Structures are given as C-alpha cells and as structure tokens.
Length: 94
Image (cartoon, rainbow, N blue to C red; front, top):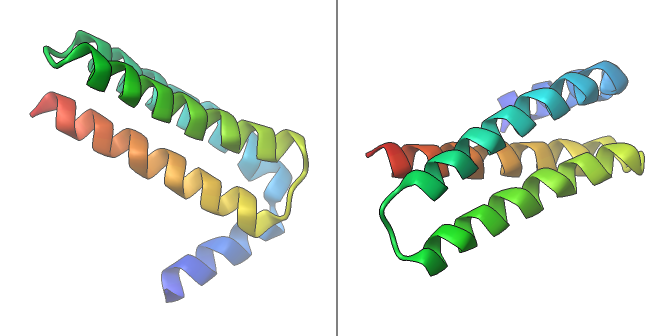
C-alpha cells in the first residue's frame, strides 16, 4: 500500500504529463492484448468478451483523462486497464 500511495502522490503532482504518457502506453498495451486475443484459438464468444473488456477499460481511462476526473479515480482506472491488458496478453501467450 505504501508503494501505491507514493505512486499516487507522484501522479497527482504531475497529472497532466503522466496522463498524456499513460494514454499512449496503456493504449499500446491494450492494442497488443486485443491483437493476441483475436489471433488465439479460443471460442469466439470468449475472444469478443476479452476484446470488449480491454476496449471498455482503455476507453474508461481515456475518458477519465478527458473529463479531468480526480487524480485517484484516473490513477485507479489506469492500473485496472494496464493490469487487465497484461493478464490478457499473458493468458494468450501461454
């Protein structure tokens, strides 16, 4: 929890710059997750569910940045988006 609070404090300090960089990074990670989900041999319903979830989470973060929501909400959406995308990538690589 200490690391989370330190990262949140740093994010609040430079929210404009960090948000801009994070949009690029998490969008790229989300794109890779979607690409791997679509290429993988799994049931079509599961593929599209993963694509839907990655897209919703990425767009939720982007919307939070554009709406200038509180730093904590924006930061939490970033973490959820990146973690879900990374899990999707890992699941599709294995």
